[in-house]
Length: 247
Image (cartoon, rainbow, N blue to C red; front, side, top):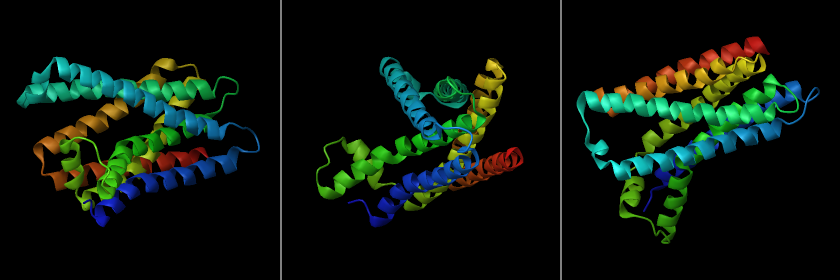
């Protein structure tokens, strides 16, 4: 059975980022509702943008590993090179998902507020897709209706409730960071500087992803999680500081 602490952690990993996104959305809506519409649609584009890019990326990754199973067993320098390449490709897909939402929300009326709101939705999509299936399977396990693989079941049953609480905080930070990335993308997009608009999410996401890999490879898990949370917190504080100046 999945413990109540684990269930609480899974729920928090989804609900708390949703609440953080709702607060940010309200602040944007309160500021801009008198001069424009479409904020809800922008958030929806962000959620959908994360989902479709993640589904396509995950499908391509499954095909790659199915045809090249030796990739799962590489170690040392080759593993780091592969991690860097994987981070780059993942960053490109992140950029595509965000760019899609920003492009659509600026088709009829150009707006930096709606562009940033795409990032809020994107961060919410990240949280939902990261832990939504685990929560769904956990509910099935406890209700006796689980029909998935034993490996997936074992993964859920061995989840640390403490790490899930840390993930809840991390997901909140990701909502803020994606909002900042989308804001910067929207700014360059509206200035018709499309190359920089696409480069920003790639650079930022590759930095976060590869840093996470390095820390988890060479540091104990608790240390790695703590350091990456400190880095993400600093990035989020920077985003909020810039946002306050922009307001």
